[in-house]
Image (cartoon, rainbow over all chains, first blue to last red; front, side, top):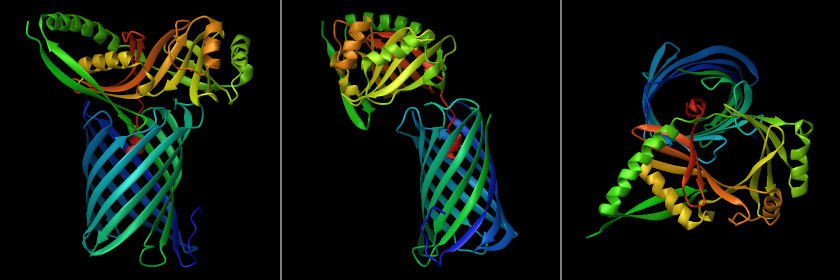
Length: 209
Length: 225
């Protein structure tokens, strides 16, 4: 694992398959649908295979300018017989490099679960991708995607910070059809105690219509 | 005749620096004629707007590069590593050498046709390195033609006789000179009538638009979600 963590750090490993569908409605509006599952395989070095949750999310984005968009959406999470609801507000903008894709994303979300206090988060993520051959990404070419996200969380008057680092190898089948295989590392709870490190192998299919 | 002046500002952000160009419009008979000419010009531009630039680009091994192109580069004596690419457009294939010039630390692209015949040298520059008269006309054109625009990248393009081009590269200059033909290629994001597009625009030293093509933009859904 790339992170240096203390011996007390709780660790988990699992898989995170996802389907991400995008529909362009017109020049301004776009709809995103995401289906994601989470299967835990190990915890603290012991086998702990259990299916944890399924997320279904629908986000409507409106392009606001030359390189930024506002979006709002809803996510429903099915976890251990519970239904958890999340409202999402997002501001994303492209920036920086002409040949490389770089997108900054700010998200506010509010999560409501029957058995827990409401959770409020402010998130920032920078995601970038590099073609592995040449300077621009063509069809049937591999690319490397990296993202780093910081999530400030407020729940029941307690504050927490989660840091995510994702490294994925992508294959662009066509511009509207991409497949990514990666490792999503999430480190949280380190402000109050030893911290928790969760690593997920991700397999995501991005399809646009 | 009373001339009423309306001053507008044209903001250009490039390489994290803001540049402001002041545009003055005169409401006069002369201006009306100019507007009519502009409308005619815009009609022509709309036709140009339809042109699409689509390039596939691949790395080339030096052994695959035509001898004449290799020889040309050898004479330029770049000290930094040279990377070769083949670019396939909708209608043509070209070969491009990309490197950095140690003299001015700028990125150079030297373009050849598929047989290795030299076509042009392009050097990445900042907006401020474009002569102010050209800046003003470019900005004025973009302001007239689009609701919003943002320049993402600027390059100076030199064409001409080989000895003059080689001398230009060796002196590491990006300023125009009588021995070579100088043009400016810009990549800009524009908005017009609720449509967003990415364009490649080529201007001459007088600031006149020579070519405009729409760049097929890539999907960034996988970076947003």
